[in-house]
Image (cartoon, rainbow, N blue to C red; front, side):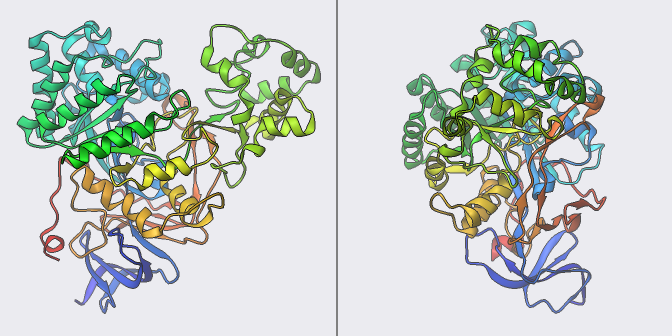
Length: 578
């Protein structure tokens, strides 16, 4: 071998197989890994990786870039955290198929379920499509930094077939059910990786209405599963409250049996049902024991709210005095709030009724924390605002007020919503280690005003493999495999997620000792100038997609080699033979 496109020299290769790290060179040519070991060939470009980690690129199976992908070439924040493949269309929401009369309806659904500003969607979406195949073709007209994988969303399918009746969750007729089955089948044949749905009351439109798919009849769901069987491909993605766990889990099993396809569902520890996750894990293990390909998507840190004056949520939103200034620019709001008289009056007044969730946050200071720099996502109970107030005798409202109005109003507090009932990540560790779970739930591209969990892949390395002090840690090869090869295989992408000859050359070069998360910040770069939470990291020396370096030391190179991945991808012949 004389010359190749790229050689990564002397790095510590953690190859995604779960095996022990080893020092080796990695040669890449024509977008494919061609050699690992002592590479004699020269690279037209070379990266000195001595003392650095060399891993596959992360394969993130739970994102919501369905709108952003149509106007933005860079899938940030995911791509700045080492993701090289992202799966969108989760939770039953998306923008195809769609009729012209339903554009606004799908925007309101996405805005409500995933907290993506409606103004940005109205301005950013071109709507140059109707069918799901049309949507994929429209996405392909724009170059991208990383690879994109799509699922057909139940909410859009139901509205397309049933119109307002579907949005209002009315029962579908047999003819409508058959049409939904055919649409899903044809979308998967056209290249969708699968189908997603939502059955949780937490998912609502921006008008407060329940998502169209909650309560969809069993026969509707089974018909859609038959569509996947007819396509001979695809996966199912499922979000549910599992309140009637017997019926709901039986339905999950039935869909897998009918379709013959894998299914994954979201699993968190919710404060309102703090022990349900154990029941679901038990049922999951039982299903796996019977040979059913069902997995749970889990997350290795709390699903946490970012509370701040720039965001969607903070403890003073329902105070009458604050509501009078809520629409003013941040700088003007902060100037008003820093007036001692205004502060005293606001802290003395009560909350407006009619906002149960927001008002519940206002007194929950036992689960409210300063996030810090670097951010602390596993804070101890004694570090809470409530514990601090008890120690010092201060009013917790006043502590929060002063934190939020400092730094020009750009500070955030951290509120662990899920996975933190006992103020520890030990339960998350149990979920992570279960052989029937997958790393997921980053929600990249979504919840842009209140949640910033897109950095989870980076956090899994920094916290779980290096920094955790409040319990056990995880082995680096396990974590790398879990967010590369395992997630790629779960959705049928057998050509990536592993550093091996013949595999797609999606690679991260990481300075593990220097790797750190920066605190989230608010940026205003969505269409119409709308906001979104952004979080950056230090320590990614290079991120490579199909052999091209797309980021160097956190800076975009301008390369846009990402592609729309249509359907399952077989293992390359060379990799399969080794």
